[in-house]
Each structure stands twice: as structure tokens, then as C-alpha cells.
Image 1 (cartoon, rainbow, N blue to C red):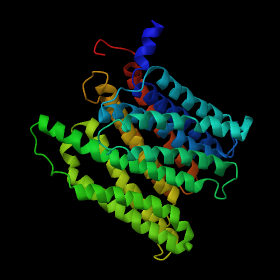
Image 2: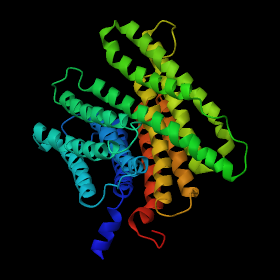
Image 3: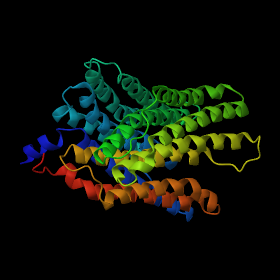
Image 4: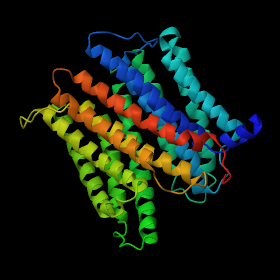
Length: 409
């Protein structure tokens, strides 16, 4: 019986990694919310971690939660893209164990030598890159090979963040985390640009509805290049005077926001409002555009040339962290889990609730500190709580799908 379950659970990458992504989001989000709540009351919560809790939170969001969700998606999508066999069995188990080792090492980093933590937390990436790369290079088309470069950059970002945390990099790893977020946003822009209009058109065809305009290849290329430009200029702007750097970064972020907004408008999201599995993808696309718009505003306000009310850049970045990633991951995990388990592609009330909770968490994280200026940590704690509940709801709804084999599988 155990052997049969093992073969089932480790036959597809989405099962363990979507489960781990949701568990990590719910657990780490709860710990973060509790720490913020206690801190707002003048208390502290001792962590067995080496870096400050704020750096632990940022690192785990990027290299814990987001890496697990991304891995689950790629291990599911790449076999479809390439026609190759999926990663399963021992290799998949090895990936899971390496990911878990990184989480345990970083959560206990205050008790472990820094080198041991770095090795444990970065060992996951080479195996993932090799497994994904082996499949991508077997495909007749090179269209998806850039994902391999992005995975290598994520590995480098993970290592650079550790070097910043232990003081090797002067900026404490902030540029590494910013670049890593930009890479993940770029991946969401590329993947979202493929699946969102395709799934939406299929649904509209099945419902004999009016179709939106055909995609514009130039718009897709320009949108992707604008996000690449944001990532590069965020790296290079440190060489410019502070105000000039902020304005250049703001300009590229504003361009990305306009292009993403125009792309979303052409998808006509109002036509699929009746299907939660689709509108959550459009909601995530909206957060991508809004995130860049907020980034542009935050940097213009920081440059202090128009006397605008200041918006903290960290708050703007959470439009991408919580808003875009939080909703898109829920949407993709739910759709893929149901579709690859032989279940209907429909969303129940719990799925819809999780989408709204994640979106609400993003709104509270961005707006809350502006409205609750006397206790901004309380607003952050509420946002963390909503985010954790969103993924706890997903777990409640999908643990049977991910863990239990049905007659349709």
C-alpha cells in the first residue's frame, strides 16, 4: 500500500511541490504575522535563525515558497512542452529532500555554520537545472530554453542573498533579492502571456462567446523586453547618482506597467468573469501591471522632484510578491491539480475564497501602513494573516486531490 502511494505521489512534480508551496506559505506566513503582531506590542519572538526576521521573511518568500511553486509548475509543464517523460520517482524525491534540507537549514541557521546553511539551501538548484535542462535540450524547438538561463540566475540569486546575509556583499543581499524578484516577475509575465489568453479563448469557444482580438506578437515581445529592461536597469542604476537612478528606474517600470496594462485590456477579462479559474489569472495579470505602476510612483516620490506623498518601495514590491504571485500561484496550482487529476476544470467556493483572500492580503499590505500610520506593523500582520489563510484554504480544499488517488487517476 505504501509503495503504491509512493508511486502515485511521486509520479508528477506538481503533487509534492504544490503541497510544499502551500504548506510553506501557510506556515511561514503565520510565523511572520505572529512576529509582526508581537513586535507591534513591544514584544519579541526568538527565532533560531541567523539573519534578522525581515531578511528571513524575504528569503523564504523567494527561495522557499516561490521556488516550490515554480518547480511544481515547470516539472508539470516542461514534459508537455518537450514531449519528454516527466521527472518522477527517485529523482523527484531527491528534489523534494533537497528543497526541505534548504528550508530546515535556513530556519535553524542560528545554530548552524554559515557554510553548511549555504550548501544546504543552494544544493537544490543544480539538480533542478539539470533535470529541466535535459528535457528542454531534447525538444526540437529552442523556444523554452531561456527558462534554463532564468533558473541559473535564480540559483545565483540564492547564493548572492546568502553572501549578503553573512556580510560578504556590502548591501546585505538587497540587490540580489530585488533581481530575484524581477526574474520571477519576468517568468510570470512570460507564462501568463501564454496560458491566460489560451485558456480564456478555449473557455469562450466552448461557451460560444465573442472572442477577444488575436494576440499581437510585437506587444508580447515588447512587454517581455520591458520587464527585462526593468531588471537590468535596477542592477545598473546603482552606478548613477541617486536621483537620476530613481528616475531612470521609474521610467522603465512605468513603460512595463503601460504595456502589461494594454496587454491585459486586449485579453478582455470581463468576458470570463463567470469562471473563477480564469478570472484569477487575469487578476494576477492586473497585479503585475499595477505592481510596476506602484514601483514607478514609489521611485518618483523618493526622487522628491514633484513633492508627491511618499510610497515605500517595499510596499510597491509586495504588489508583485503577494498580489501577482499570490493569486497566480493559487490559480495555476488549482487548475493544474484538478486537470492532471482527471477532475473538472471548475472552481468551487473555497477556491474563489482563497483568491480573494490573497488579493485582500496584497491590498492590506500596500494600503494598510498608509492608513494606520501609528501602528503599521499591525497592518503588515493582518496582511500576513490573510495570506496564510488563503493558502490554508487551498490546502483544505486540495489535500485530498494531491494526496489521495481517485478512480479517475
